[in-house]
Image (cartoon, rainbow, N blue to C red; front, side, top):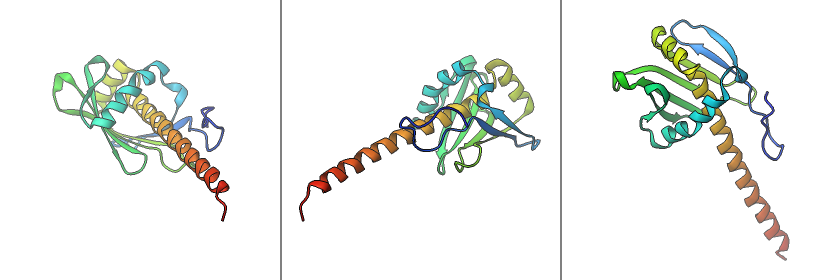
Length: 164
């Protein structure tokens, strides 16, 4: 697990590795978070947030675009394409945070040629997208937990002043 903990020190730490599965070949590897470029993830985070919030295509560097849709709890479906090919999807992927005791999973379905081209142009874009989403998910759920904790504390404070 990584050193990124919840702000208040409670809860579980965020995973620092993910299972990376290529659908066509069935190849599976464990990919460390440290193996992807932090600057790319920081660049992608707001673009991912916009893609998730709008459900529309969002342009990303090198002429690529992404479209993202949250499905089930903590699962994101992503399509990646290139401006040169219009609406054709080159890569589809599914990112799942999964149970806290398991590693997050990235499942990628694509033609090998497309993924090699994307990887050489954008430094493991599929993994960077997965980590950007996982960090956004952690951040939003941490914030929700803090809001709920504040509400409960206010409730406790109120009820402690009520005389029966």
